[in-house]
Length: 145
Image (cartoon, rainbow, N blue to C red; front, side, top):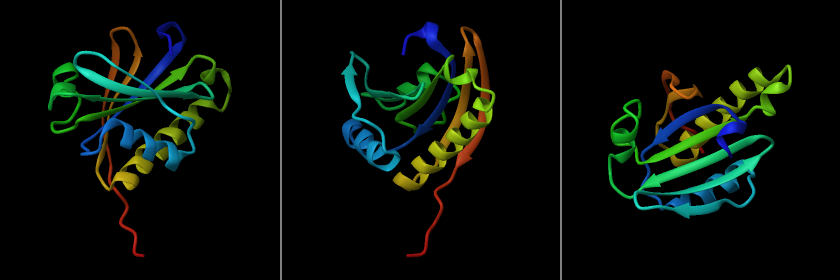
């Protein structure tokens, strides 16, 4: 999503041993998302897909701890970034703030349950130079089967 369309970016992080494509495929299946588009550069690879004004952007740097080097709010040991890039269009509806909160909880808890790992909600981007540090952890829910 182009920066001029983005209103908010919610940032989650997780430590997971899967490849980027395996991670995105699991997210796609679990959340009913369309196919991800993949790309890469010298330090990281990513997959992204936009649905209803929200872009799901999953990145996995090649080097351990690089996420923390880029963003000090990322907890140590995390090697995947899950960003929800929220368009201005999404936020125009009067119910959109509660919808965004519900989506963040659904995605954060869903990723924790899906990969059986803690997921860290560590930052909200509100614009260039305007960030709010978050300290919420989504723990996987243990289910008795």
